Structure formats: structure tokens, C-alpha cells
Length: 111
Length: 115
Image (tube, rainbow over the protein chains, first blue to last red):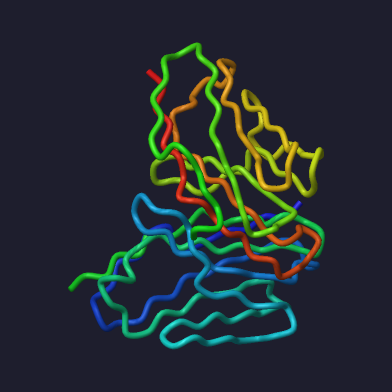
């Protein structure tokens, strides 16, 4: 089955800096890669996703890049703000399969 | 997301008792899932269902049971056989597992404490 590894497990940045979280996946047939943000005590919420036929996708301060050859994808957050502090999960799936999640990254943005 | 309702938000039980967590969705989604999350940990899949009257074990199904008698409902029973039941339980749904770009929509979770 699919295996997703996520790094780093914790990330601390200064407000205004950029943050990058990286994930690798094992199944070359994976074709959908969502990212979820989970604030403390709350449910995970989808913040951005990318399909395998696209190399990059942006939504305001958030972007995701995908390298199918290397089987890795990354979340980029620019101009970080304290409200970006949360746990971020990457995930991957193939058609017909369930999502496989990474272990999560605790992002802390220091004012 | 008002589309998935989990109840109750907090649940307390004594060791040895079975307890059932409720999950209802009005998104007309075919697939539903149960995840367990321990403090500082990731999401571990307990059970999932792709269609009514059908469900499959996830990665940590031991000590849990589910049913899917209605499309809208996917209750999870934590049995006395589950050795460490205290955790945060999340229910989720998606359009269909076979749809490759169908994201999960999560409920607000139930925090279960067993003493």
C-alpha cells in the first residue's frame, strides 16, 4: 500500500518568514495530493490540493508543488502569520483507494 | 462543516463498557470513515465504508465495530476489547472513494475518555 512520509515534524518560524513542509510518497500511481490544516482541538480542514497532471498550484499565500518523478510534494506558506500556527497533514491517494496521511507537522509562527 | 455532525463532543465512560459514537452527514456522500487521533499524533484509520451495508477494516480496527445501515449514518462502537480507548475520534466523508480527487470532509470530533 501507499506510504507517506512528512518532514519536518515540527517547524518554528518568525512571523513574515516562509515555511516549507515536504512529503514523499511510495506509490507511483498516486494522483491526488491534499493538504489539511488542524488547529488545536479542532477538525482537519482542507486548505489546498493538487492533481498529478499539475506541477504547481497557488492560493494566495499558500502553494503546493508536485514532483512526480521524485515522488514528493511540498507545501509552501509565504508571509506567515500567527494564525497559520497549526498542525499540517499531507496525504496521497490513487483512484479507488483511500487517503494515506503523513504524520503531520506542527508549525509555530512566532510574533 | 455543518454537513457532518458528531455527537457527543465529549464522552466519559468507565473501563469495561462499550460506547457508541455517532456520525451523521447530509452531504449525500457515499464514503464514510473513522479516524483515531492521539495527542500529538497523526490520523489513524479505524474503519471505512464505501457504500451502504458494506465496510472495511482500516489500520487499527481491533476493539472497534461499525455499521452502515443508512447512507447518512456511520456509528462507531468502541468495545471493551479496545485496550487504550481514550482518544480523539474523527468521522469523515467523501463523494466516493473511487473518485480520485474527492477530499475528505471531517466532523468536529468526539473526545472519549475512559477511566
